[in-house]
Amino acid sequence: MSRKARWKSWAAGALGAVLLAASGTSPASAGLAGDNPFERGPAPTEASVEAEQGPFAVATEKVGAGQGFGGGTISFPTDTGQGTFGAVAVAPGFLEAESAIAWYGPRLASQGFVVITIATNSVWDTPDARSEELLAALRYVTDSSQAKDRVDRNRLAVMGHSMGGGGTLIAARKAPTLKAAIPLTGWSPNTSFSDLRVPTFVVSAQNDFIAPDGTFSRPFYQSLPSSLDKAYLLLAGAGHLAPTKPNTTIAEYSISWLKRFVDEDTRYERFLCPLPTGDPAIAAYRGTCPLI
Image (tube, rainbow, N blue to C red; front, side, top):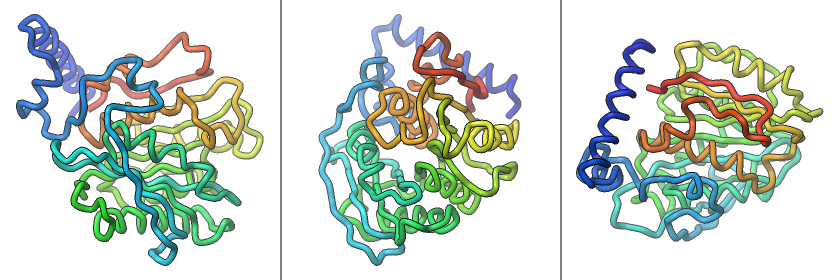
């Protein structure tokens, strides 16, 4: 679909939302009526996407090593009345334990995802090894976990920090049926991903001296196909380790990206398009709008 056609589609959807509001029907209830079978949770607000706790209560499952990755934790919604959920695997960076990315588990799960945060087989693992571990983690979630009956195996995504971010991009190359990829201050010896077909949200940091923006994240983003739905966020004044601690900006845009592409939930598109401006936490933001 051309960008012009996408814009017409987006405009029609926006008009439809206005008409729904005028008729007293909320977008959330419209979604429950069957417009989008993947919508989960109430209509979002700025406060809801920034909140530490989303609308879903969350349970956890510990996973031991030996499943193709170094063990981890699965966080999943306890709600059984809304059907299955999309799943996300998250990998740490070089020399990092699972604890470096553990906060993504409950944060994302409370927004309506099944999330596995993993340890790698070795803290020395390369980005390519981490890509395999991310994909193995998704297989475990869909095939073996306690939450497997809550997962839609056709709606999967990957995230990762540093070398885990490099692994995220490589995993998306290896598995083009993934719905979303989010590298967080990523590091990879290869910075060209012109063959990627997975909607990708690149998070970078202005003061990153380990994976400098101009050497890694920006070239990652620039190498992605122009036809791909993609975005690039540069965190103002932040360093390489910014994604390893709870961060409202990262959470808000990651949740919106996952909701838009894993759940096909156009209610979240307004947080991504038009491109955000005027936020002191963001030094730069680029992207393709409107989204498919």
